[in-house]
Length: 214
Length: 214
DNA sequence: ACCTGAACACCGTTCAAGT
DNA sequence: ACCTGAACACCGTTCAAGT
Image (tube, rainbow over all chains, first blue to last red):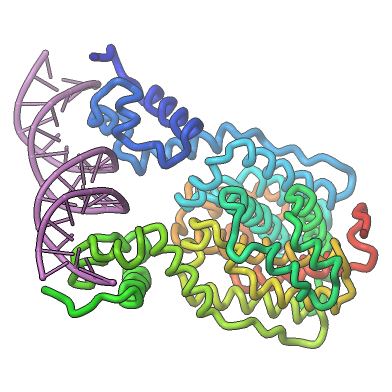
């Protein structure tokens, strides 16, 4: 079946569709060609190869992500809101984060949020390298949390499972702690709690004990 | 070349060697067979298939990792020392973390550290679900940090690079912050700083503002 | 400028056949 | 119980040839 004219846009759209519906592993050049009704080699003319096709796909999705607007009155709440916003955006694109991670583009993905964070951290009174540390700490925590979270969702059953381990109460004689660790975590609440604690720690006047401010 | 007797141990050892020397992508069934001087199909008899071969490999490497001993006087330093210890162990096995992540076994990998953390958090005075939150927050932060860090090391050049972006001083009018963000981060220092800030925030009496303790 | 089929060098896995 | 080669159904990519 001959096509009138295949465009790069069509290729990218079809590729995005495959990823959305069947996940990244479903995106093979041959399957994509079948989807488009063209020869496999036509795709190469338009997008180079699989590597750059994925690059383009990731870049496009990252640009789709809206700008992050801080909300709230205090510096802590505003910073936490940026982190939550980023988490929301990424969770809305479940395959993106793994693809971005595999392609080493987490920095790229985080840039919009980084700018917002830099502004907020400055408003909170941090300057210079301490401000940069704070920005990066929140960035690493957020992206890292998302990676672990995604991982956990993909394969929820572990061996030995957390539950098995903690039911035998090795939690320093705290049965409530053992029970809590045996239960699955409420990710959203844990995220907010941990980001808030992190930001609290970062914004302490004079810095955390033992760390010299610049 | 006929072999006297191929064992499961030999297969695992050769597989580990391939991963160590040439990275996980080099571990193909055919290459492994060539390395061992056997037919590809012999491997299947001993380890099932590629999936379970990787499982066994990960499990073995995780068990190799030593137990983590907390060091230091205060709860904060002891908790930070566990996180640092885990980071050190994992960085000594550069391919492990990616493999573990891909296989959804990050929980498994973190179990030894989790027990140590539970003990320390209890000693620091946290109880029940707040203690569980603290354990998990440190766990997520550490593993997440490592994932992002590995990712960054694998592909250090980003587009647009952090440097390019921040050289144009959009950092809320803080040139020192802009410069600091343009420079590459000192990962070890950033890790210690962020973990310490996080633990500080988690251990605050009464919990962080706005969060109700159980 | 754009599309094509054939071909190359890989994969993981199955299966019937050997000893 | 253990090993083998042949075969199947996939990959990404290149290349000469078409229009």
